[in-house]
Amino acid sequence: MLHVVHHVDYMAPAPARGTFRFDKYRAVIQMLRESGEPITEHAPPSCPRQWLEAVHCPAYVEEVLSAAVPPEKERRIGFPVTPHIASRVTHTNGGTWLAAQLAFEYGYAANSAAGSHHALHDTGAGYCVFNDLAVCANRLIAQGDAGRVLVVDLDVHQGDGTASLTAGRDDIFTLSLHAEKNFPLRKARSSLDVPLADGTDDDGYLEALERQLPQVLDSFAPDIVLYQAGVDVHADDRLGRLALSDEGIAARDRFVVNAVRGRGLPLASTLGGGYGTDPLEVARRHARSMLTCAQANVAFDHSFSRSTSYVISQKP
Image (cartoon, rainbow, N blue to C red; front, top):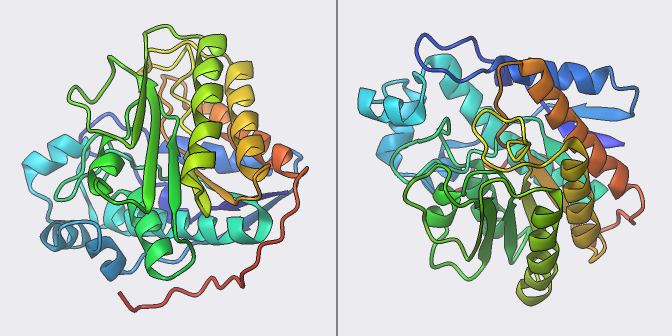
């Protein structure tokens, strides 16, 4: 069973400026519904402003929520921040939090959007407005759901925003495997960075992942893992520089689930990056990734020693 978080606001209208394709989100959920696999959809709440301001600059949060982001910040983001986008990003951030809550109950759950790992303290960047991974990790710790959170970022691009926003914290660990020569030009410092050469294939990628992830899980001992499951590592991705096949991405996802769930830990994934001229093919990669994780999760016990509440408290 795939427990997937989805909201109608994830499917924003095409922006007046910029190249980002929001149509893949509609295609992803449609492919999941038509897959023949058992899925349960969960609608996320809107993320409270206080949760966003605990990670992002309050002045920037106000700019986004009032759809008054300065042009220079919109250029860094890659599209205009309209009222619909403002509503969308509060729901995608609420969606990652909800996916984490569902993971505590079911072992694995997916947010069908988000993974906005380039967003920084006072601006968005790289198609990212608010950093849902940092917001979720911070909130899980603040409300006592977890003492330690591991962010495993397997997008082709380094999770520079997540690394920057959580730098210096000993309760959040960021692991990033990424194409060394890809965006961003200036990398941040993750807890552990694993830069990969252009053209790294299935075998090279999996060797690096198998070498690093178990070691981090055992040494850091997180209470939950947030997984940035980008499919832009695919050889045909328009913005990637790596060379994974469909089978390589599936092997990657199975390894992450087995490593995390085999240690009795919950796993929540975000959609992450995936770019191409055919949004249907990109959506198919995202849908396959979530279904692969859900299928691998079936082998593991889903009981955790906590009670789950999906009601958002308005307390900061």
